[in-house]
Image 1: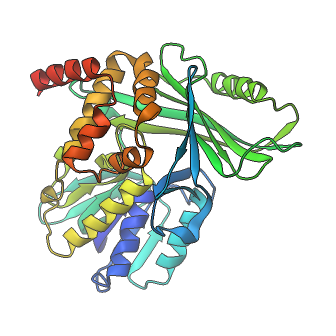
Image 2 (image 1 turned 180 degrees about the vertical axis):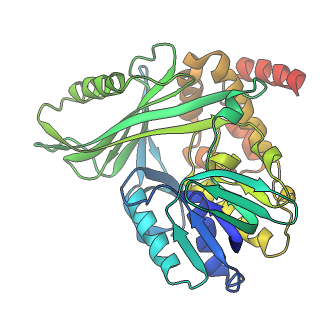
Length: 380
């Protein structure tokens, strides 16, 4: 049975970013590392978007926008994102970049197996796959098990789920300088539902129908709403170039309680997804850098997690949406109608001071959040 210093179970965004940071740090050259995933990551299975004022992964950015629309039935507002830009990275571009970089490292091996079990057995760890077994000093796991969250009631568990069509139109209909961040002018049907539009040119765009809700829809329900929206936009002649589908967990469940001395859960499996929005890319950049700095000094994974105020803010929002899922449009509309867009994005990036937090939170419906605060304090 082959032994490694580190085994990564799962090779998604969080695992690949962490391995990338380990290589860049230069502190793990003598460590043997194995990456295991049943998926070869050879398809463009997703896109990640984030706002950034620096040059974060700019070599992989396939599109970016200086402005973004927020819309509902009563108003629309074009948000100036300065000092940020809204950026998009395609999944396949990132996978190719990461695996090309990893392939030049003699101490790292990648295999395509399905992991069935991981275990901390005290002096080392074991990883069981459908083909063979391995041992290692420590495991970094990013395989998400939704049953862990479903089998409890203390923390709400919503899905951010969507289907998107990348379309090409015969006529010029889009403004490639301005994305649509959230368009709540569609029927809410008792949920938080919005359209999300990323225009790449005057006649090409990704149009996604997105929900924050407990239950998923049938595929035809998403696609019917996309067709309605395209018709409403005035587009009559188009072709579908590509489709994408996703389901991002939205929860403040304390995944870190499942970490052991030698097993750390990361990515969605570790609560790295921003619970209130479902954004993952920027959060993962920050978490992976912090993790590698930690691993260079510490070897007890139970010490890695640090709870912050933003976890509690996100928890209050999810408590509200869990009880009144249809209220999401009201909350986000109140936030973006008159709020400073740059400050809101800074808040969502978890980079604001407490005084700046209050400036953002004060825009939200106060009674809803006060009730949520009281109920949550009772539960905690």
